[in-house]
Amino acid sequence: NAGVMQNPRHLVRRRGQEARLRCSPMKGHSHVYWYRQLPEEGLKFMVYLQKENIIDESGMPKERFSAEFPKEGPSILRIQQVVRGDSAAYFCASSPIPTGGYGYTFGSGTRLTVV
Amino acid sequence: EDKVVQSPLSLVVHEGDTVTLNCSYEVTNFRSLLWYKQEKKAPTFLFMLTSSGIEKKSGRLSSILDKKELSSILNITATQTGDSAIYLCAAIFDRGSTLGRLYFGRGTQLTVWP
Image (tube, rainbow over all chains, first blue to last red; front, side, top):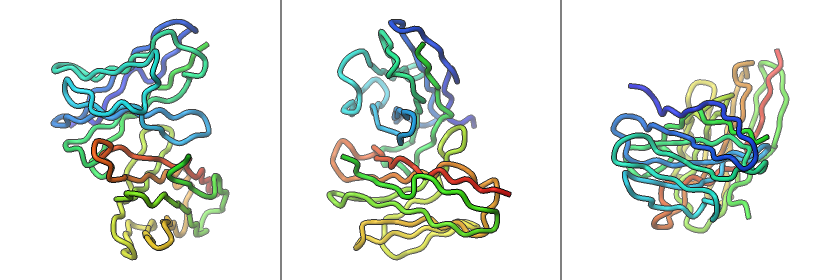
């Protein structure tokens, strides 16, 4: 049973381009969480999704960022018109039920570098 | 403001030393506290603590929650170079739709020298 798969592992984008980060949850997990880790900071919650629904997006910047978790396929975190401040590690976690923490499995992250 | 605060931010010890990492949290609607170990990849789960005063152990690692002091400690005895990592503390709060969200501290960077 593969763990949470994130790709790409590393992504380099020029300012103004779009970044698409993918997360395939563990089999049987229907709850997906995205976190961002800025340099020298802890992980910050961004968004919580279930299949086809955004449950809590209160951690998402209001502009340029969006997330989806379609019925089929991975969850996508999309960042439009990237800026240098978007450079960070983006982690996805999945769980089978919305209890958080104990049931979480984290992916290895996507490291986004904006040049 | 930060709901979870860790200290120290970094720690350097020699193999064989014992270390204690600290985590304090905000009290409002607190439910549980978790510890993770992060090497250069995914954070891996260590402990989840909900009840005060009950120690959880896994090999050389142990952790305990003190609800009176709003804090937790993570102890690592007889440290090894493989313990070098960032140790993350996170809290879950009971707030309806935010159930499931983790609030992380900034982490403690532990370096163990041979």
